[in-house]
Amino acid sequence: MVKVFSPGSIGNVGPGFDVLGLAVAELGDTVSMEWGENETRVNITGRDADLIPTDPSENTVTLAAQAYLAREGFRRALDVHIERALPSSGGLGASAASSVAGAMAAAALLGKEDDHQGVVEAALTAETHVAGRHLDNIAPSVYGGLTLVQSVDPIRIHQVAVGCQPTLLLVTPNIKIKTKDSRSVLPEKLIQSDWVRQMANTCTLVNGFSRGDFDMIKHGLEDGYGERYRSPLIPGFDEAKDVCMELGALGFSISGAGPTCFAFFERRDDAEKAKEPLHHVFGDCTVFIGSIAAEGAKVL
Ligand SMILES: Nc1ncnc2c1ncn2[C@@H]1O[C@H](COP(=O)(O)OP(=O)(O)O)[C@@H](O)[C@H]1O
Ligand SMILES: N[C@@H](CCOP(=O)(O)O)C(=O)O
Image 1 (cartoon, rainbow, N blue to C red):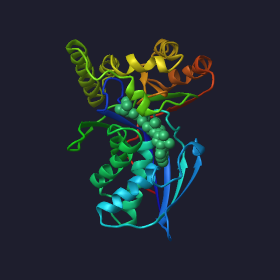
Image 2: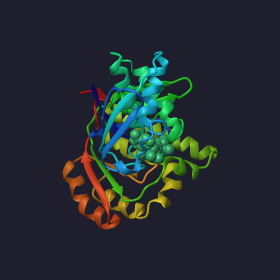
Image 3: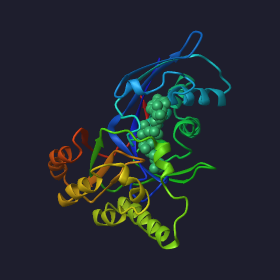
Image 4: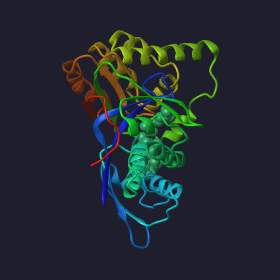
């Protein structure tokens, strides 16, 4: 039997729609996998377990695992257990983390867990099935840290050296937003001044992370695309942003397709102070304070 932990992630990281992704330390899903007898079986425990399909043709763990096995010329039944810590349709890349864990576990069964390119390709097959053809969650789940997806076809992923360790605050209101639905509210075209600004902010943000320059990160985090069109789907978003910014956050935006929102703080103390007012704004919500994961998915 093999066991794989795969971290959740913040897709987009503000302005980098479908391009930037950031792995979250100590928050992810764990998949145990072994060869099965006749047919593939999936068992799920943990957060939102009842919302995730156990049908192997709908679950991203088995979809990704079978995609990996198929590319290696195998067709075998699997016994799978998924221990979840990430919210489903919560904007923390849960479907991608599971896809990556599934693909890496299948690779590990064949003794090929270091085949990162194969894992990315197999995970993308599963992610495309449930959420859309994007890699900004898969990349950080596989490689850790901050990743930049230059293109999906062909797959070109770059790891960004991160020169600082801001404190990460994640607040997840108790509502569900499916990535597919949240993508449908976004316009397909932007006017030139908007995309120039978006590109300038994304480059500034990446440079800020590389140099460990908090001021640059702060100026680069402004997002005039996803946040503009998706924040109305998250009641309390503006108020929560005001709370965090007044407490000195470098920025506050939507994680992936939402409803989770993220903020970066220079000091952990300030992030801790935001907990209570955020509970007041969102009512039923979970707040997680942590850091960027240096490592991606790994066999335990
Ligand atoms: N193993 C899995 N883990 C998480 N989601 C899964 C899994 N298998 C299938 N799904 C489906 O993927 C969808 C969730 O993906 P999505 O809406 O992209 O949000 P997120 O990735 O934030 O959870 C849900 O419809 C969920 O049922
Ligand atoms: N770039 C995607 C990211 C979706 O992330 P998820 O965690 O909500 O699945 C998007 O913004 O649609």
